[in-house]
Image (cartoon, rainbow, N blue to C red):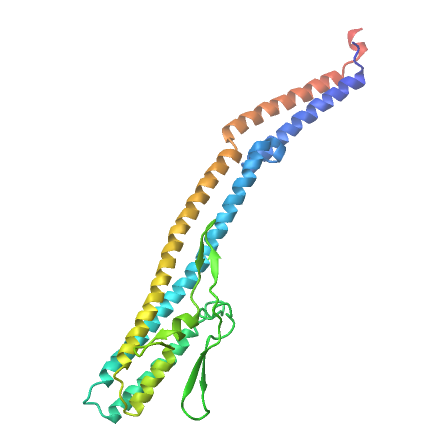
Length: 306
């Protein structure tokens, strides 16, 4: 079979281009540290890489969600703890106010502190997070959940209302695990048991206590009412603590899944540097040989044999 000069040159060029392509691919692998640069490098491996990246990204998002839920629950826990402290001090004043040796003047002094504690309780119920969202407002996070309105104006008597909603926000921290980020103010501050039966909001209980002290009236039931209110808030704080424990446990699970996914991903797509460097040297040698062969073939002429 006769081979023309043009065919010989075309084959030489093709050999050099093929070697250059392989060399370039190896250089890119060494630069990126990845064995699979395009799906055609390893079709099955590429499919596994896509699936693993999806799993890893999903669980990283779950971790971020858990951080948000943890932050909000920690803030609620702190706020409920402060509210319990306020009620504890009010309870101490109620016990003190029931002392029969106290007169109207002494009780009026106690009433001043009770009024201050009431204001502190309202402020606590209207706590907002770092984003300016009210943590006890349910879904209605842009509006302060507890309002204080003097009725009628100038009377010194106040009506306390909840202006949030009954929603409870949840975030996903696992494939099938959701956790609440807090409680609404209606449940926490408004529907509070009292010793006479039924429910009453904490603010009215404290105001009635202050009024009783100011008018030198009986406060015999107030310590029990405040004790029930404290127990009520302690129960919600226990819920918050349980959610924080659940978040910690599931965060550890997410981290394990991410770590295992990253290890598997590395075993599939990461480059074996020793093998790649050895292959690079062989390809360089092959390219140089192809170039030298092309140069010699290109210079061949019939006159070389005359």
